[in-house]
Length: 148
Image 1: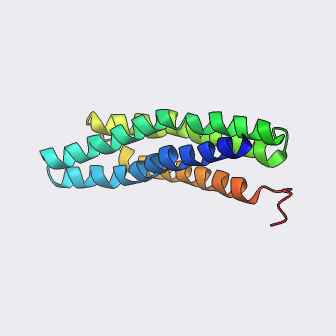
Image 2 (image 1 turned 90 degrees about the vertical axis):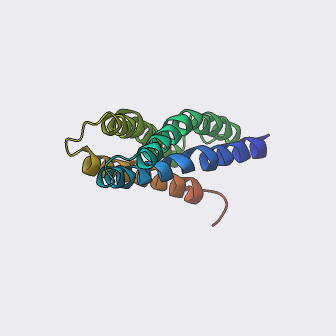
């Protein structure tokens, strides 16, 4: 059962978190291109699509910690330091997404451009960096018994 849970956890991370990180990273540049193009229909549609991808896959991404907790419980590692740090960083990444990235995208979609594009690019970079650190922790697992 552990292998099934781990497989679902990894698949959920790839399928859900991957698109959010890519779409969120593309969003600020797409907004700048849309402004440069005079907000033509095609560029606005592109920006709206990227935001929709971020919103939908953010919700789907909730499966990642669900399967993660199930896997960790099955492995008996819920109290390991590397996992606790990963959980904290995952919660922080989720907070950055929910409280900064998605609202920043909404502000830009609603035409409020108060320097938000640059700030959104920076916050999105922080979000992506947090996920990269979590991914490395999941692979390296300090104290792991794999011997790698």
